[in-house]
Image 1 (cartoon, one colour):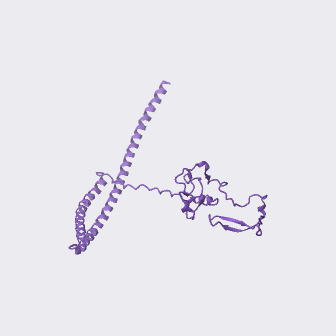
Image 2 (image 1 turned 60 degrees about the horizontal axis):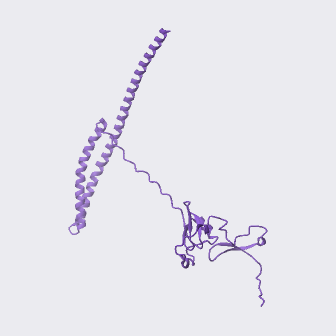
Image 3 (image 1 turned 135 degrees about the vertical axis):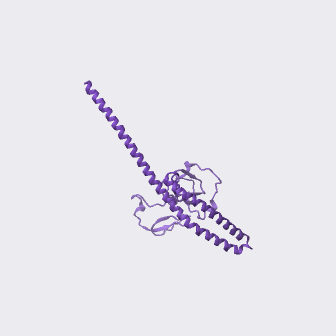
Length: 266
């Protein structure tokens, strides 16, 4: 048994040596792959920089020639016009500086191209991309209305609002349409607004006494259609739809029969 244990231990040592050798080979292969990958990246970066320099060298003469023509053209009127003379001088000065700086910069960058390939210079970093600008959320649509009584409602942000009687309020379109039906609010061009606006002079209304404009039952108009069959008016056929000239609210008109005269006895 001891001999078997010794043989097994010897095999384990042999396997460990073999694994160490394999790991060393793997590390060497990975190192070579990294060197080749970096070399390929350097070639790509150097070629991209070289193409950029070719584009600069092609565009620079056109700019210099255009700047000279502009300066010569402006100088025609520069002898009697101060701003034109200054513009011509600035154009010539800038053109001369760019011509000198371009010669030095292109020569230096051409040398960097070869240094990138050999690894003597780092790969130029990529330009930073501007952070995406989040589109602002559209503001909720509102309608300006005028209150005819103390009202309360929940706005588009979920906040409870209270408005005093005879003041201007901003409501969502759906809320404004629903609340017009009960004449709690009227459009701001209503002829009554100018005479009533601000009549209470900064009074703080009590929310408990305010009409809840989010309550459909509370906002139901007084002249609404009959809702029960037991109502005697339920059997009367409507004759058409009319519009209240004051509130602008539509309502159903019913035929109540012929006109009746009342006699008052003395």
